[in-house]
Image 1 (cartoon, protein in one colour):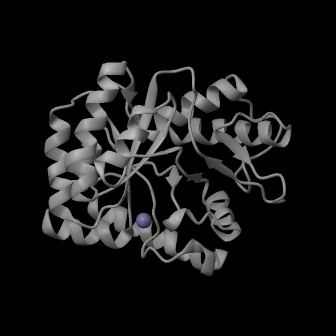
Image 2 (cartoon, rainbow, N blue to C red):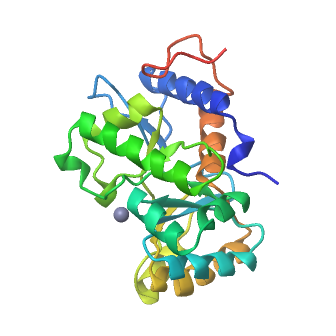
Image 3 (cartoon, rainbow, N blue to C red):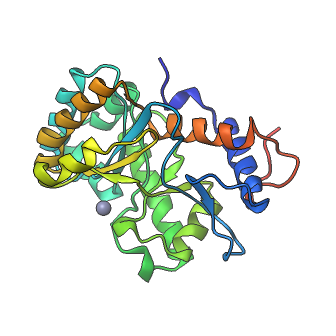
Length: 263
Ligand SMILES: [Zn+2]
C-alpha cells in the first residue's frame, strides 16, 4: 500500500530541488510551473501526469466535524481511495475538540493533510512575514491534533489567491503551492459535467460541504472506478510528476531556495 509517508522529507526536497532546477532550465511540464517573472521563483502544482490513470481528490476548509465524520464513513466503502485535506488551523482545532483523534485517524488511513492557512485570510492582503507566522501557527495546530509529525508538503492559498507573498512563504518553508485542475463542487448537475470530463492527473477541488461529500464524492468515486482511475494522495500524484519531469532528480545544479540539498 502506498501513502504519503512512503516518501521521506529527503526525497521530497531532492525532487523539489531538481524540479526547481528544471524550471530554471526552462524544462516545464504543464503541471509544474515556476514563475519566470519572480526572481524567487516558486512552484505551483496544478495537475499531475496525463499518462497515468490517477487523480488526487482534495477537500478544503474542513470546519464541520459531522461532515468529516460522514466522509470518514464513506471512505470505508472505498478502501483503495486516498484523499488530501486542506483544513485551516482553526478547523483542525475545533473539529478535534469535538471528535478527538479524527485527524490522526485520517493519517492512519493513509490520507494526507496540507495547509490552508490558520485563519483563512486572503493571502493578497498579507505580508510574507505575516504568512510565515500564520504557517507556523497552522503547523502548531496540526501537531496538537495529531500524535505524529506528519510531513507537510502542500499548501493551498485561500480563495486560490496565490499572491507573491504566499509564494515566498511556500518557498521559504519548502511547500508546494497547490492549485487544482478540476472542480467537483456544488450542485451535482453542474459538477457532473466536470466529473465526466475527468482527466488523468487531475487535482480535484471540493469542500467539506454536505453536497460535495455526501452526493458528489460517491458519484465521482464510482465514475473513477468505472474508468479505472485511482484516487491517490497529492504526494503520490506529485512525485510521479516530478520524477517524470527530471528523471529521478539531481541536487548538483541548485538548492531548493534557502534549503540545501539533503545528503
Ligand atoms: Zn478555503
